[in-house]
Image (cartoon, rainbow, N blue to C red; front, side, top):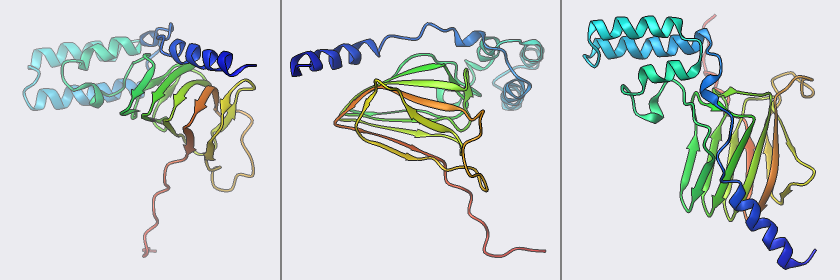
Length: 215
């Protein structure tokens, strides 16, 4: 393949990766833990006067009966900034042009996540995330950028057969005592390309043990 056609392929992939996902994450079913997070925010809001008692009662009733994440998200949208919401329902591509961009906390991860970086730094923390699928494809279009994936111990990091990822640092640990990945371990598959940049996959730091213990 000529260098001209290769460059054209890179540019095409770079542009197409910015297209938004088609899945409606707001329709995902909510869990009891998700409802409890929203109830906690509502309780704080009525305590400091952001909600009246009547508003709190109405929203609390809706939170307890909510079936989807979209229903819950609407109950706290006017109470906290986007980055502080109990969870984030955002299916947009992760894009960083000569800047830093991150997805952290309780966010919904679609089965395919487009990541575009031109001279930027992208951080995706999946440790508290809600995975739509146990097999997540990260569609990379990276030029002179860095993508950092922070995932729980035991998650498998693989590359698609057609991927062009020249620099991958897989530092994900196995759980204590494990000798290999569990058969049902979540999989993060890297697709697309990284040109003049790198991908770093790692586990979060384990909590430090105290120097002194009480029996």
